[in-house]
Structure formats: C-alpha cells, structure tokens
Image (cartoon, rainbow, N blue to C red; front, side, top):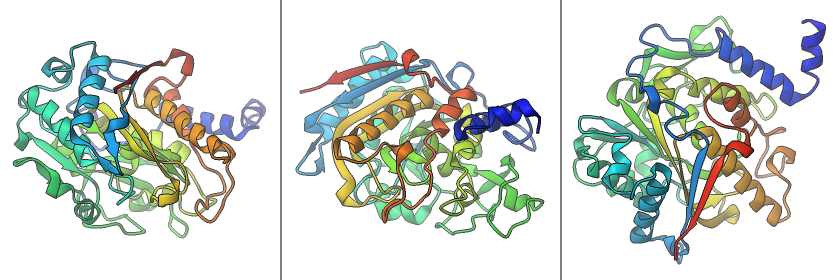
Length: 379
C-alpha cells in the first residue's frame, strides 16, 4: 500500500470510502454472468426522477390505540405521491413510474413482526395506486425472501384478490449459500466469506439475486420500515433491498466484530438488475424502532406517524437515519454511530455509513444541503 493510500485510511470512514471507490470502479461490485443491464429502467433507475427529493407526510390519525387506520394512511399515500411528483396525487402520479403491462414487485419487510412491519394498510394503498395507473392485480407481486416469515406476518391474508405473492426460499438459514430460488446470472462477487470458508469457493464469496427480482418483475416498489439495526445502524431503503434481494448475506455481519455492512449494502444495491428496477421507495414510519433491531423489542418502538416518499434511496435513508438519531437522543441514548454494545444491540461498531458510501457510488444524494426535504402535516 502506498504512503498516500495509508494516509487516506487513517480513519475508519476514509478507509471505507476508499473501499467503496474500489467497488464502484472495479471487479468487486456488479459481477454478472450475462444480461447485466437487461430491462434497464433508464431515467427511472436510481436515483430516479427526483434525485435528492424526500417527502415526509405525518398524520396523527394514522394510528389510534396502536391500530393502523386505513383511510388516513390512504390520504398520506395520496398526498405524498402528489408532493413527490408535482401532480394531484391521482393516476398521473403513479403513471410517472408504471404503465399497463408492467409487472411490479412490492418488497415488504416482515422482520420486526409483530410490532414493526410494512403495514397492510400501506401495502393496500400502494396497490390501489398501481391499479389507478392501469397495473392489474395479477401483475402485482408482493414478496420477501423468506416464505415462512412472509406468511407468519400475514401478508397473504391482507392482499386484494388476484395479487400474487412470491419468495426466494422457504425460511432463514445461517449459511444461505444454496442458490435454489436465486439467479445464477446475477450476483455480487466479493472476497468476503463467513469464518471457515475459502474465499476461492464461489458459493461462499458470491451473493445471487432472487429470481423474483430478476425474472418475475420489471419494476420494483421498495417498502421498508423505519428501523434501527445493530450491525448496519439502520435498516431502511438500501438495506431492505440488499439483504432482501440476495442470498449469502450473513457474511456481511458474520460476528459482532466482523461487520462489513458498510460496503456490502451499497455493492448489492449497485447491481444493475436491482438499481434499474427499484423505481420508487416508500418508507413506512407510522410505527418505528430506535434500538435493538432488526427484531422489534416493544420497549424501543414508537409511533412516528409518518410515511416517507422518494425515488432516491440515499436521500431517503439519510433523512431516516437522522430521524432515528433524534429519537435516540431524545430518550438519552447516544447517536447510532457513537453507540456501544449492550444486551439488545451487540455489535461493536454499527455501520450506518453504508448510506454515505451508497451516495459515493452514485446511488443517490448524500449531501443534506442538496436534499429537498418536504414536510407535510395532515390533521
């Protein structure tokens, strides 16, 4: 390593930035056997039509007595799409992204069940928006990687008639190196493995993209929730895509000290088949989690009563990270980047800097001075 490079890596953040630059430029990132740019979405690809724009719609009526309220949430979706797109929020807003004949995936997040998941009310409001743009129910696929987590959360029971469901594999396993349910033509190749595996082993050093993303849909709506994560810092738009779209993700945080989420997350999201298809991100923050994620301990859950809208996942996650930090500070906890392990969050160093590194890799706007945050309050 040259002397200038050593000096550039004197801080953990600068070192990670250097790694990200290498990922963006060279062979560790978007490795694909064929069809790397198939079904590209052009101007809709990240960061999409509205780089740096984030809309936050708050409605105290969205949750009452701990129960999500359908009509207020529909109003929030309508208003958020209107403000994001500069329309009246009706069919014209959705037609900026979708048209008849599209097969649209909605990537939900069931991990924090039963306390903090993508709410059925939000999912149904999004489906209604797609319908208004001419997308038929049979051309909408609501999915997650793991069938049993998806079913246990109850998503299949909440969907309108005709909407399909999909998954990559049956359930979580700690190794995750089987590629059944994943596409051998689309993968991230990174010389990072779980302890005890040889970096020359392709199954151990690659993460393959789920077939539902590569073969079943041509566009994707990303529906994460506003949550803390003990290794990644936060699990918002970027992580909902990275760890919800590929296999062999345990290697990104194999132990409480071997944590590579900072580089793994933006490298996965940079894969063309993900970057080109994820055209809209809606962050469900009606209920949120500020500590101990990804599972949701109820003592750290709060009613944030807000839904966020963006085409730019970096700008969206930048704002979401700030919201979680503000909540943590308000209850006397340190900010995520300064947090130390405890019984609920055991990783030595969290890595919310994956958001900044994603910005450095061109996935969106990191600089808060260039983020156009539009706050709307509904009665």
